[in-house]
Image (cartoon, rainbow, N blue to C red; front, side):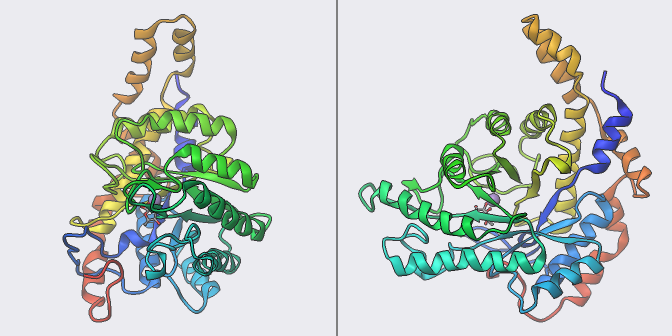
Amino acid sequence: MADLAAVKRALAAQRIETPSWAFGNSGTRFKVFAQAGVPRIPEEKIADAAAVHRYTGVAPTVALHIPWDRVDDYAGLAAYAEERGVRLGAINTNVFQDDDYKLGSVTNPDPGIRRKATDHLLEAIDIMDATGSRDLKLWFADGINYPGQDDLRNRQDRLAAALRETYDRLGDDQRILLEYKLFEPAFYATDIPDWGTSYAHCVELGAKATVCIDTGHHAPGTNIEFIVAFLLRQGKLGAFDFNSRFYADDDLMAGAADPFQLFRIMNEIVRGGALDPAYGINFMLDQCHNIEAKIPAIIRSVMNIQEATAKALLVDRDALAKAQTDGDVLEANSVLMDAYNTDVRPLLGEVRADAGLDPDPVAAYRASGYQERIVRERVGGRQAGWGA
Ligand code: LRH
Ligand code: MN
């Protein structure tokens, strides 16, 4: 049986990083539904991230996205965050929104455009030096739409050259999180389409390069927990972008579309001894709340990850190992399903109460009046996020 005190300690120590951009307006190519009270400046995104941490107790860092969160004084922004009980986390680069990047950024046939893109990656490390961030998160929209449009091999050489220059600029305590994505916006070949391509580039780069798994970036039916188990074994899993999806990169609330998959992923994390923050995996959210209220949605997403984690921590590892060794297929599966089918909400309520928090963070947030206050205060100015 799992040691409940140890389970509660592990849950109290869990850390989840929120994404600044999820607090801003977002949508699809069909429509962006602006919401009242949405942040207009990075400071307001950080204040909203602090609200998530205030009610969950496990979200003390917020990731930034450049240039969406560009400011003149990043050290000042970091101090602003500290004053509100949070720290600045991963720095996300953006080489996917500039007209120059139509045919690619670091893989573009034009060396001048490759230079421009690489300089942005290097600028992000300057920002990390100012914010004290450890993680440089790199996602490239780079790819092609038609066979023959460009040379697949040459694009990999260009990518590797830009990654090498960026890697060599990293400080001792800094690292690269290299994110992959099967498709979109490219619809024939994406230059980093899968975990294997990211992994191979990370091995080529060195110890400070690790893979970032965005749970929405796989072909339907992909066994993501296998990728987790494999990368943990290789010591090359650096981070997650948690969200959920029914079809493609839907960026829905983590655990909303497939809570069993999230449980299976966290089960491999627990089995691999990788839950503890000291292990170094950055558990981040990467979501878009197109129609639902954003802060409660992010609080709910944090809770969904906590619930999947609590169930994974309750797996009777000894009974599981015995059934697996005995080749007792049904017993092994039922040991795992017993944990998954356990209602862990009372346990998490206790963990929150032990931390002086309301057992129900969403209810506590709703009762706080914070939502009404930001709707009242945040009038005028340009709302952050996708053009409303
Ligand atoms: C790309 C992605 C990436 C971010 C962006 C906001 O789909 O997952 O992690 O840069 O979303
Ligand atoms: Mn992502």
